[in-house]
Length: 392
Image 1 (cartoon, helix red, strand yellow):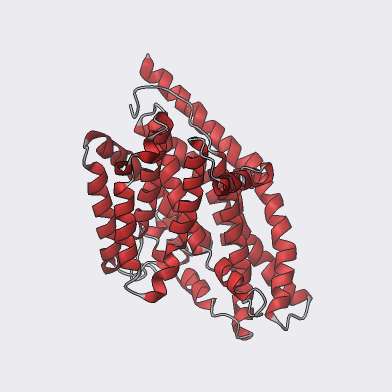
Image 2: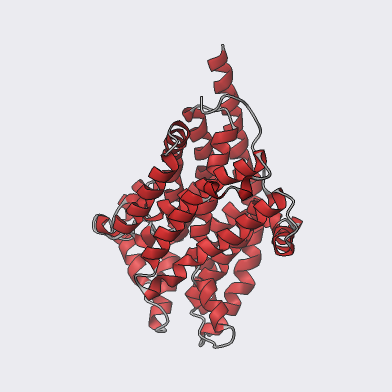
């Protein structure tokens, strides 16, 4: 068993709300990136939104936190744990993936239009997917497609459904998380060992080869570990209200942050990579402050924003939003140039915003209700069945 006692996992409203904001950051980032926003109005904000891979890094941190919470609080065997995680990810993922495969010809026409206009050179991605069509489909069925380097299979992590590269990454992390958790529980020095290991993995990961969006686990393990370590700090604060005053609680996390920062500042162009750490620091410190009844006005404001019912609702359907928006961008991106004369990138952006945002919201609701929730419920049912069988 993964735990000695049964308990229901907590739902932390701030994290659920943060997921909703991050998912829409990715949606808006893809729309602006595809349309090539160039107007100087709000240029800095637009550049931040287009850098939506930072949002994915925060998603990885959240995954570390939530998975360690689930492992710590739920009494499950590895078989039950990984089965439930699979049913949580796979139904929506595979539906969106095959939809993207069906839309592949439209993908080509849209990317050709962008290239002819001189706005983007995305056609190379279409050609990479088209050149190894069935191989890409085969590896995507396993959800391990982001483990394949560019030299072995070009554009494997992002073929057909580019956002799905991070789903593969998450699946890799889910597989190794229980072993990491047990190691931390068994050895007192485990935190320091893991901190050093993930820092070294980050520093030397680029010797492994080229991966689209750094999608292989060693490239992103430090973010997952920051989330996992944060959960242990959170759990300590729940048990002891004075845990915040114990500086030793934070030392491994601080050490990792220093090691990562040292790596980032080697190149000034890497400074933006601190964005996920800054976002998580703000949100996590707000969660802790509220938990220990701090009087921090800033923490309360952040907490209230993220726990607004509307924001939490967006978080509830965020997984569906994250995957379904890309096929919708392809659909409308290929239709608009045929219906209207699109001479400027700003016009394409406005049309995509007007069409993709509401359609993504509607499709996310439908996917959550008819695909995601039944998959989660089925996983819960199987878990109960396995537990009953093992108790007999």
